Amino acid sequence: MAGADIAFWALLVIATGLGGARAVAGIPALLAIVLPNAVVPAHAAVAPHIPLARLAIDPPPPASPYAPQVLYPVVAHARPDWLSARTDPAPASPSAGTMVKDPKVAIVIDDLGGDLAHTDRAIALPKPVTLSFLPFDEATPWLSAEAARAGHEILVHMPMEAEGDHNPGPLALTVGLSPDEIRRRLTLALARVPGAIGINNHMGSRFTADRASLVPVAEELAARHLIFFDSRTTAATQVVAVAHAFGVPSTGRDVFLDDEQTAGAVDTQLAELEARARTQGIAIAIGHPHDVTLQALAAWTARAPSRGFTLVTLSEALRLKAERDARQARAGE
Image: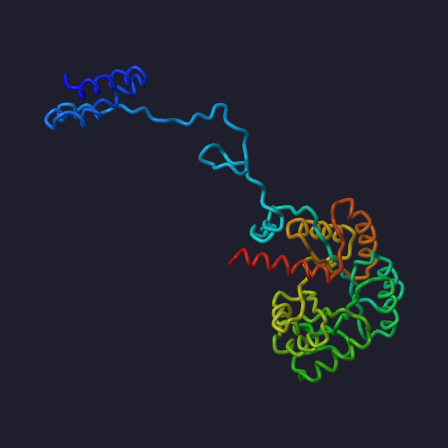
């Protein structure tokens, strides 16, 4: 046996003794080096078995927000409030059957100024109640000033032409007047109620349905930064559409409190007001200085907070309705 052969077999014995199974598994590769080419193919069919290395994680380490999720679930931090506020969709507006948590109610009492005693009782209602004065009654200027000093928002209850033979009062706005005359009469009315935040229509079932007649009214209110609250005396009213076209804040009443002047009827309408506020978030009612209405409102406004309702001003109600309508428009896009 040649010296090289002796050295090979000695190295093989030593490697086998030291490496065990791993040394045996490497013999084919070693033979490929030292044996003739014809011998190697005889062993080629035998695939070498090489154990796979495995990473044992036992026991698993504690959860970490920085570890890769391929090893175990990542515990992430919640999104900050400022990011959620900019990326989360706006909450859907309440739909029928859905109750809001903090319903808001606004109340307007109009036809004021002609009766001192009943006007004083209206002024004694909570401050958020909005009071609307007939502009050409003799006592209107100082009664409306008294209401403003008491903390109420005030309106001009602007006479407008009605259908039929109803008389809305002096210097009423009528269909067929020139735009300049409409502006003149409106200016005179506003001057009688200093500090008014806007107007609402007294009667007006014909005038408020005529878009062309409403345009000079909306232009004048826009120039003065005043609102136009629609009493909704006709289903054909165009007030809100025309007002919005000129950038005038506007909305219509939701409930008419005292078309029937009985305690039971007014209570029924107050219940309707509550129901609308709970489903819509905000609802607005109009009433008049009748004994039954004033008595019912004094009682209702006293218990409203305990029943979950917040009484708000008319201007706040317009803002809330505008925000609600904007949310609905975005949701419909």
